[in-house]
Length: 97
Image (cartoon, rainbow, N blue to C red; front, side, top):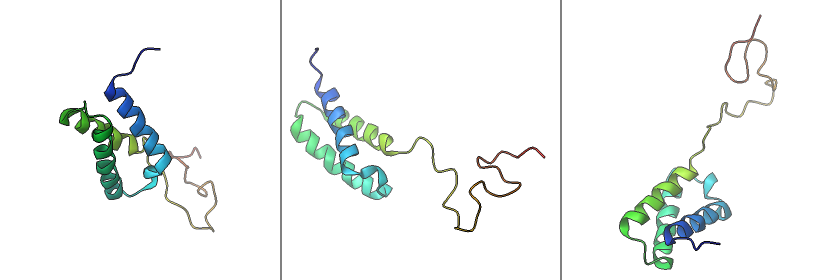
């Protein structure tokens, strides 16, 4: 197995931390604070990484925390039918009459 570069190891470790710490469910401001602290920690663990690499690592981490697809609908009240009721499609597409 080929030896990984420090940037690759740091990125893999960052993604592992993101999954284990539950930061994906945190508010964006909390994610930013968490990411800053985590990048500082990784800077100590990987002293070969420069400011540019650490900035890239933070940017990749923050992008990783963003959902690819946002929620299509907010939680519906309990009395609303699961299918959205007559005339409303789940994904926002009009239904055939």
